[in-house]
Amino acid sequence: MSEPELMSRAEVEDCLKRAGLSLSVAEIDGIHQISGYLRAMLRRIGSDRPMEAEPASTFRSPVA
Image 1 (cartoon, rainbow, N blue to C red):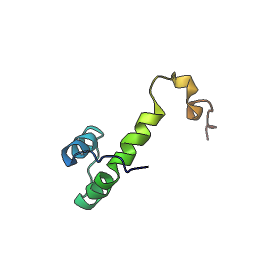
Image 2 (image 1 turned 135 degrees about the vertical axis):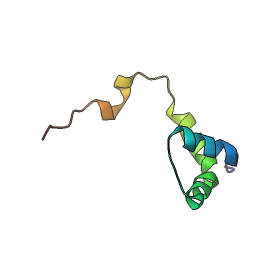
Image 3 (image 1 turned 60 degrees about the horizontal axis):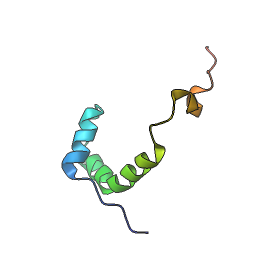
Image 4 (image 1 turned 120 degrees about the vertical axis):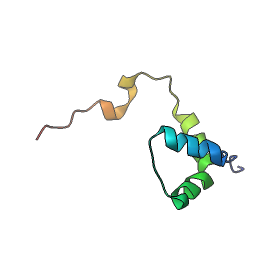
């Protein structure tokens, strides 16, 4: 299997900005280096499922 194509540096920086993240140059470099894999994982997740299908939203944590 070949390695997925990297996102452009500008695209990575735009995604981080939209997420409200302020990262160092080294952190942005690291995310850019794996950006192709991140994009591939996000495609597999899919967004066509209802919120109830998310296991994390199935359980309530006890209130302390």
